[in-house]
Image (cartoon, rainbow, N blue to C red; front, top):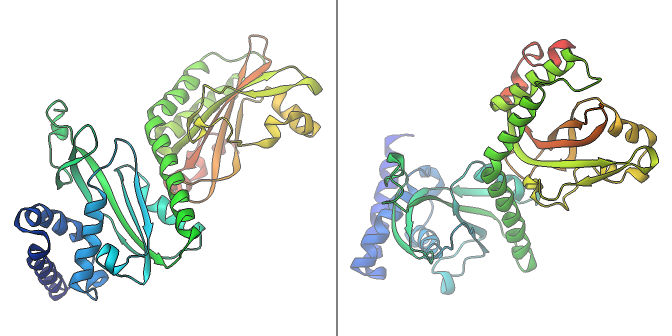
Length: 360
């Protein structure tokens, strides 16, 4: 960026801070000034150069006020059309303010959801802050991301966390549409939290399957099992983004076969037992003979696309990996199902480097 653009941006920021003392008072202005500078620190000058000082102040101050209290683990989401009297600033766009624990995939997941709703994102401001709150969620102190003792592992003395402040602007909507946008963003943030929180457990489930296949199931070719284990190791080695896990139990045979969800097994986005990934597997009675035979077949591995699009990271149909569970007689008694996304790096690899594909 040309030095002149950065200098003009710095002058604008200083002008707003100087003016803010009259509006906030000396003490409040001192606390707000550091937040304000950090808020716009990484914003390209061209994104804010045409904004009036009052707009720059009002935009950041609204977000500051929103974050005064945030209950633990709860996202704050506000979708509104700024009103000069109510909010202290005005915009011709609809504004989305989000405060959430910092975690992967926030920006790309939220923007993908807005695109799904046919809302073009016109502006994104996304600073990270180190935040200290009391047990009620009241804001005590705000610092730059990276401050605090967490990096030193001293959690007892430092109860701070890193929070993501996201400000987005889209073409203006109104009425019930505002609540609809908020609700769908809330669902996306819920899915992200569940997947991030359960990510170690999902990796642990795949590790357990890999270890289980050290013993070749009855009736299955040993070379096939070895290749499946290598494929699962490859996925486990950061080639697959885990978003959900679930176990299924198979009871009965033939027309009496029934697949049941193990309701306590769900992880990530599949915590909800009512979220159906493959309707044909659950409703075997209405499934074709070919599908019923596939469910009961001792073929261990299934890799396919789901009918569900991911709400996280990339808005594409998720990649499903299913590994059947066999009893000591080699009969299918269940299946472990992972849903997620193969990484972009995985798609760029040569098929000769990927287990299973290299044999084809």
